[in-house]
Length: 55
Image 1 (cartoon, rainbow, N blue to C red):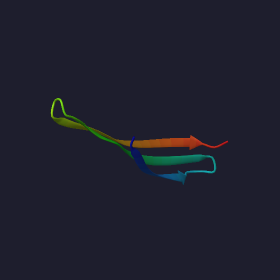
Image 2: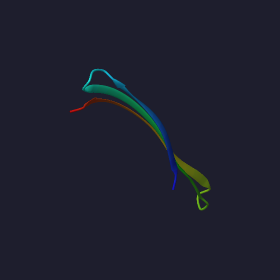
Image 3: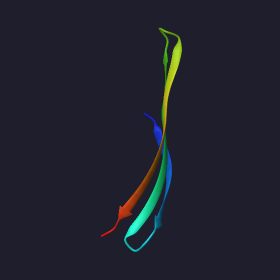
């Protein structure tokens, strides 16, 4: 189990067109492997850009 935090913004270009930007950070934690004496973790950063048309 882990957690995700993010933020985004959307801007109206015209009455029908918008542009957006989003950022997500995900942390799925870490696990210790005693048999090989190491710890591994998994995190992810995602940035997305988009253009939307609203009907």
